[in-house]
Structures are given as C-alpha cells and as structure tokens.
Length: 354
Ligand code: 13P
Ligand code: SF4
Image (cartoon, rainbow, N blue to C red; front, side, top):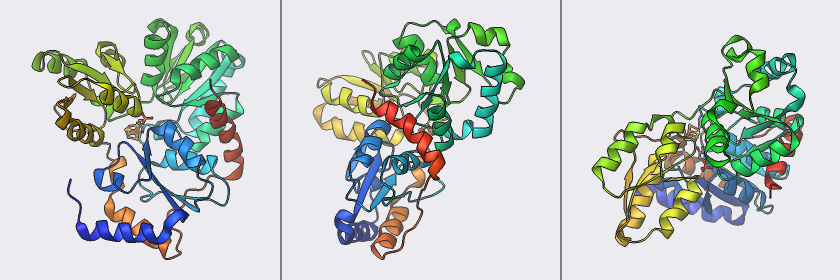
C-alpha cells in the first residue's frame, strides 16, 4: 500500500537523528509501510535473538505485538528500553492463558497426582507471567520454528507435557512431526471445572494441550485447502502450524513465517503456491515473487489480517520515533524483575536447544 510521503519523510528524518541509538525490529506480519523502516525482519524466534544481539542500542522499537516486546525486554539489558509503538497491539491467543488460570491448572494436575511428571512448554505467544510459570516449573519456551526440538527436550525431562497456550501448534507438532497419536493428546479447558477432564484422562495423556488458538489461522479450513486445489491444479499448499490439525494434515508444507519465506525463495519459477498465514505477509510475498513467475495466492477467500499486528501503522511509528528523537521515552514495555528472572530462565532454555 502506498504510504503518505510526508509521514515517510518524517519517519526517515527521526530515525536518522536517532542513528545507532535506535534499533527497529519488524515481525513479518507488519504492514509494508512499517516494514520499510525495520532494521531487521523475522519470525518470533529470529526477532528474540536479534533483539538480544544489539547491546549498543538504547531503544529497541518493536514493530510486532506485546508478548514479543516483553520477550525482548527480558532478553536485553536493564538499561535498554523496549518500545511498542501502540500499546493496544496485543495477541488474542496470548490473552487466552492468564497467570491465575495456569496456577489453577497446576493445582488440578497436582490433585491428579501427575504434576511431578509434567514439563510445561509455552509458545512464545504468551505473556511474561506464563513464561515465568514455565521457567519456575522446569519448562521451556518454543516458537513455531523450534517446537519439535522443544518437545523432544521436554520429553527427556519428564513423561508428560503441558503445552500452552496454542492447542494447534502443540497437537500439530506432537502428531505430525513426532508420531504421537491424537489419543495421546487431551485439551484442558480453563473455563471448565478441572479443565473439563477426569483425573484418569490426565493420567493417560502424554500431551495436555491448553485450549487456546489463533483467531487468524483458525479461519483456514479443510474446505479452503480443497477449494484451492480444485481451482489451481498443481498448487502447493503451505501453511503455518497455528492452523487447525485437519488443515495442517491436508497441506503439503508446514512452517513458521521465516520457513514460508525460505520455501518460496527456493521454489522454482512457474510453481504455484497457496499460503495459509496472515495477509500482509502473503501479499508482500506475492508481489515480491511475481516477477520470477511464481504464483502465490492466499489460502482462503476471506481477507485475514491480524488486527492487532495491524495496529502498528506508520502514524504510530512516526510518533514513536519523533518522541524518542526529542528525548521523550514513550510506550516502554518493562517486565518486573521477579517475573523477568523466571521468564528468562525459560527463554534461555529455548535459546540453548540443540
Ligand atoms: P512466527 O513468525 O514465529 O512464525 O509466528 C507467527 C505468529 O503468529 C506471531 O504472532
Ligand atoms: Fe496472535 Fe494470531 Fe496475531 Fe500471531 S497472528 S499475533 S498468534 S492473533
């Protein structure tokens, strides 16, 4: 989308004034008008690593959502300030697991006599509180690019996994990538007494999946896959592992946003692709690869932006950069010290995965 030339110039000038004092990170789901000012773009894993690799930057401007900015704050030094250009850029999936609900779940697991065998694995898409819970109970964080390694590690530490908060990533990784069966997985519903499960079901399960999901990826259905295959003969279906199990099972390839980009870079000219992930990224890839003769379409017929990712727009970025350039710190994301200590433990276990 064409961006307002006046705002583009203001963002450029403010960023130039800040120089090395600012480092701008952009998740792949960000708008083009924002991505053009990112010093680095990436999936959740790459951005967490890159944030930690810039100790000289006083300000880390995170163009992404709240849990990503929190993770960056946890992984950077105390005098570095992480800034989120719009504080309303949350993630509905992360909001599906609160600290109180997870503490209650642990009580249920304890009452069923299995808490000692359970290792929590939490998706990056969770609040710092959930990451701290995970660290405190010997678990690790994962992203969609290392979920299998995280689960393998966790099964070396204990017999069962509590996977938070995305049931789909947990199930898809366990069943599609690791050969567990659907019967090995149960879903813990935080809105039901005892999670809606009997103690026996908990004792029999290998994977206890939290009942959370991504509202964007939840929109893709088996029908979307069948429709696109009928419409475009020879199409390769490539989806994100936050999609539902039947969608992932019907797809040809599955992976994180960074994986999706790499797969399309490596694709031969003339190949056709239907992509099941957020629309800003799919549009950008369709435009980028069209000149090379790669046909890239969105997996579903209905438009599917992540509304909270989209809250970070050029006006918010300009306001943020100009404020920082004027010496005014705005929208800082700061995790309290105790939460940070335990959350960092869990994040560092992820960074140390083989
Ligand atoms: P990745 O970029 O790690 O694949 O994550 C996708 C996502 O939903 C981020 O919110
Ligand atoms: Fe959260 Fe889904 Fe948006 Fe990612 S795409 S930030 S998981 S709502």
